[in-house]
Length: 352
Ligand code: NAD
Image (cartoon, rainbow, N blue to C red; front, side, top):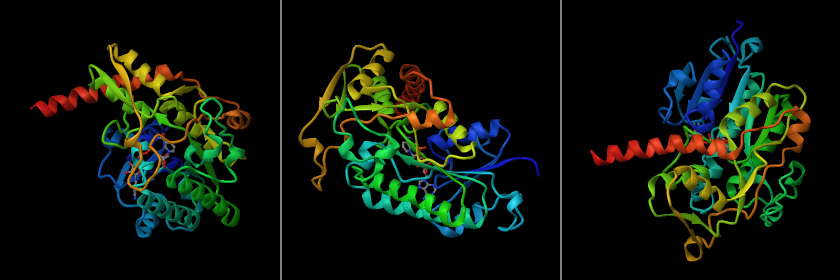
């Protein structure tokens, strides 16, 4: 068997769809597994050879899907999956992970998926596993100054993430690294910083800031609401750069991570909103919403997250000798064009 094989867990989602497409293009045989019955935006033949709709919290399912179609048994190391990408998680944007309402599900569901994946990947002798952690695992106390957030990999401890989502990511990073130490599972752990682009969630509460700003600019004629004072800073990485960075990291031999995969082009959320407005060509004002609306029923802080966050790519550049390069504006133009289409199509459907 010469064809390389890849398993993309959570491939029914945003990053997994793009990754599946790229792997197919490279000639891989690709299986996607996702709890969603189908990908929201892609036809399955564009992103995989086999799409399995199933719940990765179920260890029996994970046992089955971890066996490659060319593998005779778990012991058949030669034909096990060449590349496994663990992207499945119970997650969403600030409106989902920072309100407190979804904490138990986020922790329980994602931890089960990761526990099952690490265990089955190990006993199925898969050749390499990628785990997608998040910048949300970085300590809150290093991200209070919007102009100088510290997200260097080594700043992770003493740990103090600002959400249960971040705590679960930190736990699972350690889980995969422990499987590496104790069972020789070949792992690569990366911390994604706000990935965006077309073919991702753009409405419904789980969308991230770039998609939300593009949707609001596409829908509105007068003003768009931005949560908080809008002076909180973030950086955003376009999906194509993300996929490239993942594959380069996955296909080198010596460095396990954790490493940041993100952009170092930091902007305020108001600047991001203004960018979406400028791209839309409309005369729209930004309305910053602060105060009461941002204390949830548990007394949690407003769902705007930390004051500042930016990727620090020093380690990635040093180890990989490559860096991401698409300017935010270019990525936002592509994203706006796609979301604008979605908005038009959905208003056509609604008016029927
Ligand atoms: P996404 O929500 O679009 O994709 C995740 C997929 O996991 C979804 O399709 C979902 O249906 C699936 N899933 C959830 N529970 C499942 C279950 N029990 N069984 C099977 N499938 C299940 O998210 P994404 O943006 O593609 O992110 C991929 C990974 O990267 C996630 O682990 C996320 O935490 C991480 N990450 C993403 C970003 C980002 O900006 N997109 C930032 C940091 C980390």
